[in-house]
Image (cartoon, rainbow, N blue to C red; front, side):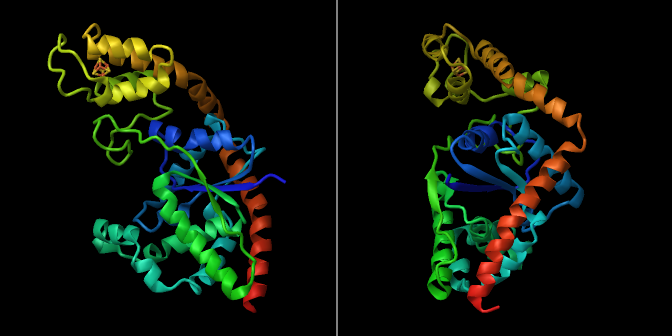
Length: 323
Ligand code: SF4
């Protein structure tokens, strides 16, 4: 029996390098050794204001990128959270065993209140309960997380433990599958790469757009003139060269330090390597996008497979609770 892995991602639309290096490539690799369930968590997206048309488009775009990157709907269950209605009922039931104080004390909740003071909705408070439901409903034993997400997973584990303590050992307490999640910086070199900051490079961007964005990247601020020696260790272009220019890194580092290469040429080299690496993914994406029914079919199939597991868990939960 292979262990079951669950991971969810908010529908953020077209994916960027940060999404790929931080999550998607790991999702693809995990498929070899585990039974994976990957969920587009659209209910979670509703805790912040959303535009319905944009939400649907974002799901479509994100799943297209996932498939193009190698997430395989034959091997993994890929589905949308709200297509499995059992999760909403399960959320209600798990909310009954979650003390309110646990939720309102969470730093993530306080941060959200600070970010959106005009929209502190009920769903926002229950967000971590819904996260626990996502994992526990599918009895996933492993959740891929980076160090920084361990407290979130621990919270889910606490809810599961509390449920099992009160009603018997029905739910599986998930373990962390620790992964190294590189912090991919944006074009500004200061903030994490993110679509909302518009400092990102989309996986499916055209080669020209990719080049344009790369050429706008902030480099070593101490390098004012072409003849100034550079400090690759503080340069985001160099960090990404390490991923996309294997075999050339030592040379680039030496050339930067000795000012043998200027930032413009260095970025051109990076853009060329990035475009070459992403070309097969982009080709696959274009071909998948030419099959308008494909994403709908993948998600419908994923939802029906997920529902089988979800219905069984919910039956066990309700029975344990005396319903
Ligand atoms: S030469 Fe390259 S690595 Fe060095 S500072 Fe410029 S862009 Fe960065």
